[in-house]
Length: 218
Image 1 (tube, helix red, strand yellow):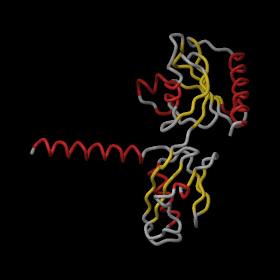
Image 2 (cartoon, one colour; image 1 turned 60 degrees about the vertical axis):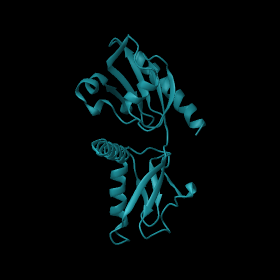
Image 3 (spheres, one colour; image 1 turned 30 degrees about the vertical axis):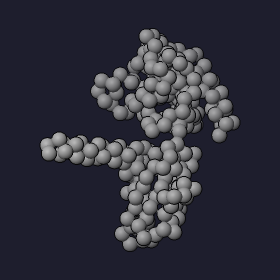
Image 4 (cartoon, helix red, strand yellow; image 1 turned 45 degrees about the horizontal axis):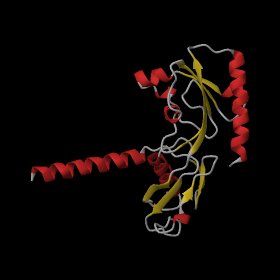
């Protein structure tokens, strides 16, 4: 009897963990969402028809009946569900909404410098700096973990070059150093804290070339 109870408790704990993880998933372009509005099949996804899923566009936005365009950039599934519920409440009394991620989108990023394998990587499920570094095989022995440069695929290089210290995340849990990556982001790992303006200029030039190539295959 004790074994049965323990098994049931373990199963419940695992279910709760999976549900919590799904709720905390940060949505990304390409995600396909099954959205169910209780009592409103006309705007709900159909379980048997994947074509009825709502897709997050490359700009991080999603169109939903009645409310129109919703910006989901940086939102978890839980946060999006709350936002959609609030927006729909303008048209439906006490809407009951369930959101499931039917298919994960991917985020393409570039990792260069002191990593085992430089190149472009498609990230799924999680899209943070540490995920990209893991996909690239991790740091080399020469890598300066306090000096990682992130270049965004938007605006001018001066506005979008950020310096990250991944050690602060690994040792202190500083989430500001383990940012969510966006489509076309480039990470550059320096060598032993040594980097020059020429190095940054070369990296930005390579990043621009990468963006050109990634835009061609969209």
